[in-house]
Amino acid sequence: MRNDIKEILFTTEQIEDKAAQLAKQLEVDYQDKKPILLGLLKGSIPFIGDLMKHMNIPIQIEFMDVSSYHGGTTSSGQVKILKDLDISVENRHIIIVEDIVDTGFTLTKVIALLKHRGAASVEVVTMLDKPEGRIVEMEPKYIGFTIPKAFVVGYGLDYDEYYRNLPYVGILKEEVYMK
Ligand code: IMP
Image (cartoon, rainbow, N blue to C red; front, top):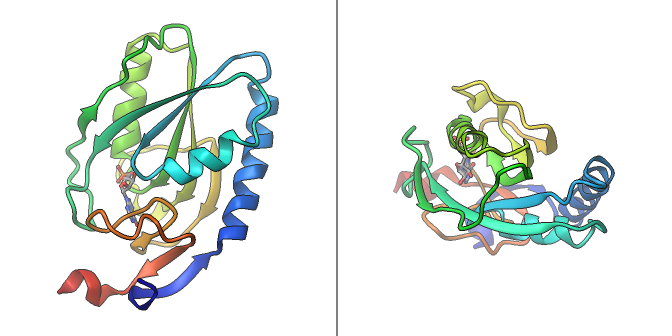
């Protein structure tokens, strides 16, 4: 897999340190709120795992699966809910955990849905932000790293469902997806 990576952007250590910092900030901001950490499958799995172990307050963990990419390297703009929540979010404080924000379509749709269902508050913590890719306005409150407009994989992020298990974040060589 390493041969398919053009450049490593963030090492395991850098990512884990950042997750711990963000977790401590969330711990302060959500002290008495019993928030739901809502991971968006499948890319958020390593990040939510690192965040939760550093949050020493009562939290609930839930997941949703939404898709806008359908295997390529650009967003389709059509956000589909593949797996919905099976609990009520009414009057609950929700922290959406995302791997990366690009166009903003996915989060805009999920935030609107949770608010419509009566959530008390909805914020986003994302490991990576690609602001140059934004098509709809969306500003995550908690951001790990801001990156340029490149297609990255690893630490949960995939290309065609592969590379999620790389322990670092790297830029995928263009020839891999131009084939
Ligand atoms: P958005 O709806 O365009 O903001 O895209 C968010 C979702 O697209 C993320 O949760 C990822 O699944 C996927 N995505 C966006 N950029 C990348 C990338 O560089 N590599 C892998 N997946 C990406």
